[in-house]
Length: 131
Image 1: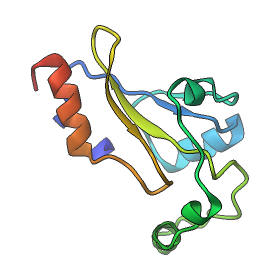
Image 2 (image 1 turned 45 degrees about the vertical axis):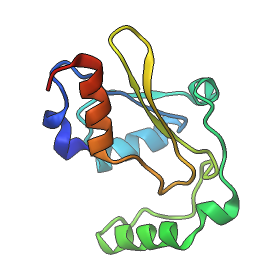
Image 3 (image 1 turned 120 degrees about the vertical axis):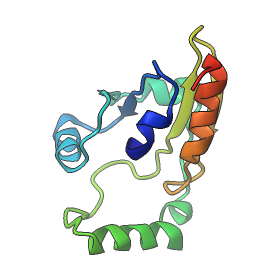
């Protein structure tokens, strides 16, 4: 998504919300330079508010997820050690309109389940009526 931020309508604001702790968040920031704010929600208040569920162990360690970890490892991501966080917590992607209403909802069914960037751009564009 970072590579396509300019494709979103002018005035679109982004925020990433994570339940990780400060140490892991700092490591993530060093590895992935994000051009938008990252907020910590260790108590997962926002996760509950947006009805984000939990995956099964079988879904989390599916062949697709293992394949992705191997791909990251081959690309030089050597800090992919044993997870220290709740790998069963699912995330989501949401678009909130200018009036504060939720206009797009994507609740992940697994760690490799994400909406396309095109779908997010389309939802953001629909809320503003401009590109």
